Length: 134
Image (cartoon, rainbow, N blue to C red):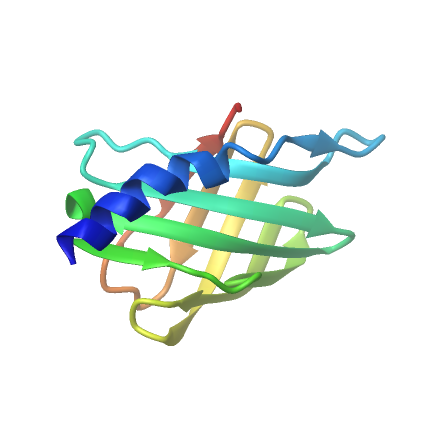
């Protein structure tokens, strides 16, 4: 199990480095990687989101407590949502760790995403993500 966690921690940065930010003519993000900056450096959370008209699809990789708990998806989409306001989306987050669905709401601006996940054991308040520059 420790070996699997080591392999995972070494390969995830390479996988996530393979994507670049793309923008539409209107300046809205089409595809973007987002990372969580942890104050205690024990959590490594990333989102990979694609925006298509008024919908968002994406995947997640959440590593908590320096790899003690890993919730990463191998599915193309673990996040699905629809726009409910100019910069707000509501949808579903599917945890591969617990194999459960959770309601989500996230608000986006150019420099930050605030993600709220309901009834998710590892997060009790909104998580702030910033764009990942690769």
